[in-house]
Length: 280
Image (tube, rainbow, N blue to C red; front, side, top):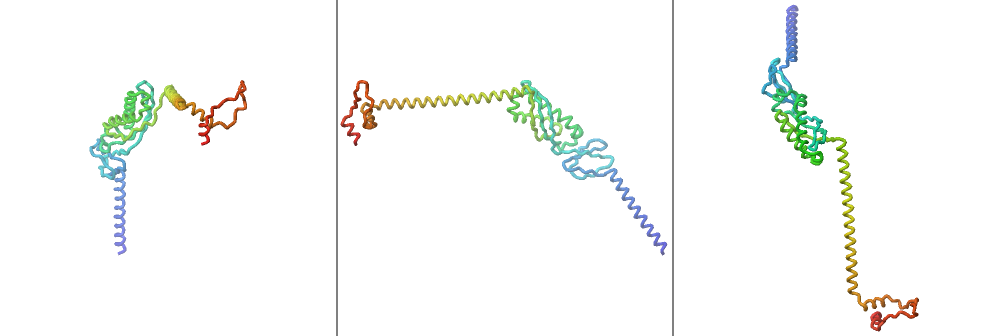
């Protein structure tokens, strides 16, 4: 009985070991050949069979695939920003160095075609976006003078934005926004702009001073006219009787102590009527 029990126990241990070994072998095969693929958030999967791009585009999540036969290339469809420095010339032949920031992403529904025709993200930037930005910028700045580029910057930005969107959409790329980060001109032109701004400020200051002087002169004229009119009206109202009455009202009752050369006192015509009026 003991021998039979030992034989049964050995048989069970052998089967258990066989099953464990088989499971490990299957797990190793699964890890080696991976019959599934995972597409992370913000990505799309390009399906290829023996290297040929398929019409199917894998969304986010886990997907079964046929090992060896099928491979999956994952591309990001998130918005990313890249900066570009490009040289151009204005309408008046001023050299301009521009820094642009472009926000863009791959069209999720056309990921397979983008990868088939262009490649991955780095190939998209170097092969498509960089030359497109340079060409669109040169075409836009060539229509405007350097001064217009500075003063109507918003219009230039909109023009570059629209043309870049139209150009890149043909490649399955979506432009979300374009920012004109900086413009740099030649040192000579920058000095000329600064000198012009200083001259404009000085001209405005001189205009203000001249306008102020004109206003002050006009005010003096108006005051002089008012005084002359007041004097004219006063002369019209003055009569000998009024002057005599004003003299009496201001007289303190004493004669001058200085006598004129002929020794006579000045005579003041004081009538009883005038004195009566003063007493009243």
